[in-house]
Length: 363
Image (cartoon, rainbow, N blue to C red; front, top):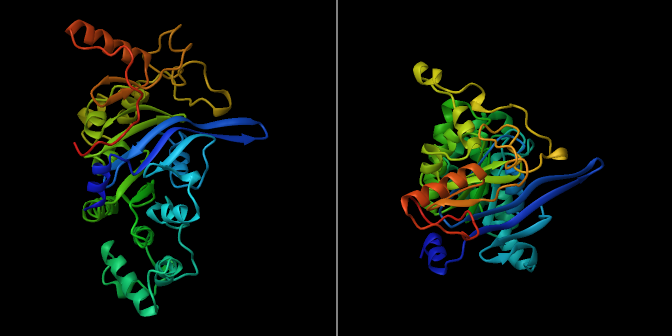
């Protein structure tokens, strides 16, 4: 039975963040980097987490990877709180969840050859018995990430390879321990555009062939569309998820004004279509509020084109189910959806279930 089938049969998500928050304590006061985030990833599925730089994507990813302990909330792996695991269970979790960093120039040790980089985790966890096995296994890992022939790369050092080749070595290192989940933090953002598609195709093949789940962090909705089309997308703004749903729905029919602004920022090669884009994404302001002085009510309201005084600047919105599998944190959008349902005679849930941003299968 595959990992994806086992996960679906048990009904237990692979990775789950429940009302997770991360507050950084500084000399100048507390900084709420992530607030009440709910995310779930099942085996073999893709969850894309998108938003501007500084919105809390990487902090959320680090909590999922066990690198940061949340200030509040619960991070679960296969149904167990990772911070309550015993030593053996935590070691198993740390091998099953692997992290691919953004910068391929900083994530590899410059004085280690590719072979030593790949062999280190294999030897550390007793997956190989001798140097010959380590060499063969390292060669196999390079073939998986399309670095062939592997003999041409095993003895190279990072400075002898391009950025794309380095990032493939980083992915190979993540695969060395047969992970069930890979957290890819902006793993293509520092690569040339000409080789991004090849990298994404390679990651997609690994997802399909090995049944690896992905928490894919990106600021680019075009990348999320390409890689996570059959998964789901969560959009973050200032530490909170403001829109969540199947990737095709979020991309083709965004509901939250912030998501619309992100899509408006995607370059358009057609001059006629580009001319129709709203200046500044249609936002009232380009200034992002500081975490040290978050606005009252909805933190997006100083920039929001749907802003209503006395509503948006008073109460912060919660993620609300506005249609099947679509959740949006916006007073105006939620109200319009409610009025639409009432007008059409549809069934309205006065108290919708608590959103969990779960992945329930490919669309």
